[in-house]
Length: 461
Image 1 (cartoon, rainbow, N blue to C red):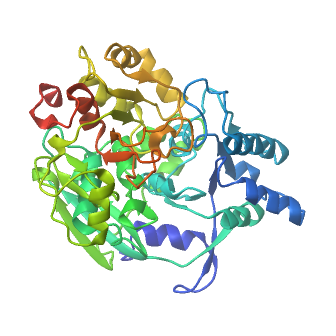
Image 2 (image 1 turned 180 degrees about the vertical axis):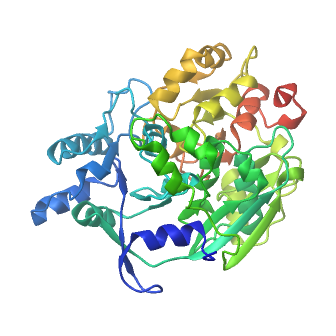
């Protein structure tokens, strides 16, 4: 036994130079880009007369700014400029990409795994904080800034200080109606948004082993909301089965798998901190405030005000201590984002709306995370289920997750959202966001307020 975690093994593979504890130069295997954080980096290359060192290890998507209705009608001047810039840049620098409106276009953290570019053992970066998503495959993945994007373009490397290691064990078997989104929201609610700062979070336990790859991605995706820019899981047979046959999967797949099987944490691996959560008694989670730690289990009263942050959050959300999730009058429901817009998310949500209709005076939209997901959902009739229930069925994109496109929650409205952040004004000026699982959002659309999905027969199916 080497006494190393999976993270140690991957880190050691990618160090070019430098001592541990100091900045080390790391080789980047995969660089994902999108239209928001890349324009200045490309311009920096031009100004310096440089090229992209490895276009073949770079991949671009259009996602943050794209409209999900009338997808080519981009009216915001900045959004249009960013979209046009990416289109011109990927052409000039000969970078593989998913064209806006193409059959593989979608959110960057959806498209990477779907095409098979995200693989165990890789060192992955992107100018987006939710790059931690890719850690679900046994990869190092994290978000970087625009100047770092330019550095990776020019050198295919990045300087990083190795973080400490935090082990999170999810144990037990969840009740029906409790999902991986609830696991990560419960973790953040119990320990706060800063516990992971300076650490890579490794997620283990029988509750993680039982999850699908899509469910694992949900947990790793929100590592950044826990304070860590990196989340990672050990690859297993589910990982290999997910990747087999995909467009960019290794040609000699069995040889790759043999290597991937060595990239797991040793039994005697050491960690700087360990947290354990038993999910067997966990209830569905709903956030009440303006950061992801301000959440409670369904049926639990919202907490007393303990500081000025709580006071501000209650004021912004127009909520009070002692209220419960059932007291929230919803005006919007959003099913989407890189956290929960995969096919399994839409299938689960559809169970709770089939044959029913959304509550009056409520707007509900479904935004698949990629066009392949949209097509797969339509093939099995999910689009009809949602539309017959009164939902709007949209084209793929980041959509209402961050309000950087036409999809926004009107001021003062409460929105049940499957996204990852409930910050002030994130989904629109004055929008009041409540994070939850796809099942909770779907059931809330029908009832007009949050209900306990564990009590619904659909949860048992």
